[in-house]
Length: 178
Image 1 (cartoon, one colour):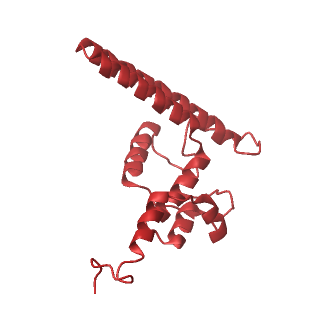
Image 2 (cartoon, one colour):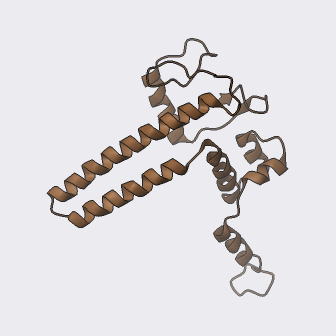
């Protein structure tokens, strides 16, 4: 997917995870065909484009994001309520209470997530999985290594595993390859 209008002014081409591609196809089925490649991709619930209100800080993005969070929380609550009802009907009140608590936790998490969080998550996960820093920069649209590194966060478990492997074959570890 290529984003023509990026924050730094350069087009950014990013790979989509297969699940994201599946969801995008599903959205496009709902949205309808794009006859004009420059037409807005994302629409409101009323199927009209989000408008650029010329406010600094992505006003149209903020309203789209707020709407997505409202719809997600509404769906989570509905699904949680349905599951809790089923557990109660089957006589498992403990499971019903667990379901309600799980739903409450998920809704609280959705409230905390921001679009910017995804950029931090992308850099952190890609680097933790061993991605080449250049590939991370390309995927996130970062021009400099310093900026990209600012988005990446330490993953203590990964760091510990790497440090544990440092001695293999060097410090006389009997399990090391010769």
